Length: 120
Image 1 (cartoon, rainbow, N blue to C red):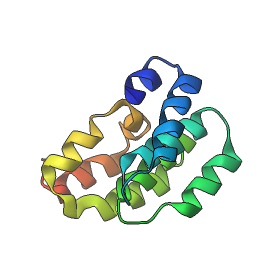
Image 2 (image 1 turned 120 degrees about the vertical axis):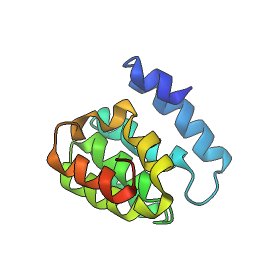
Image 3 (image 1 turned 60 degrees about the vertical axis):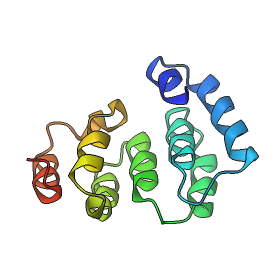
């Protein structure tokens, strides 16, 4: 639901949904954290991004990648995705197709990452 809202440009509504879910409690590494950080970044709520990033565990590198993508930080996004390569080609290939990672398309590091993950 929140991904749909983000895709429709309804960032504030997505934040409400994600904050509610986050307050209800999520498992360590839940992608709710990454999407909430992404939404905060898209809304320009940088202090909220920083506070959330400091609280979430590093167990799921896709969370860091999402937050970095939201901030437009390609270098950190690629660094996080590099840590996620161990998730395998299905997971990396699936994630890279998400619109949140559109900022990476056309970057030569994308091909290298896909090759390393076994997606190519």
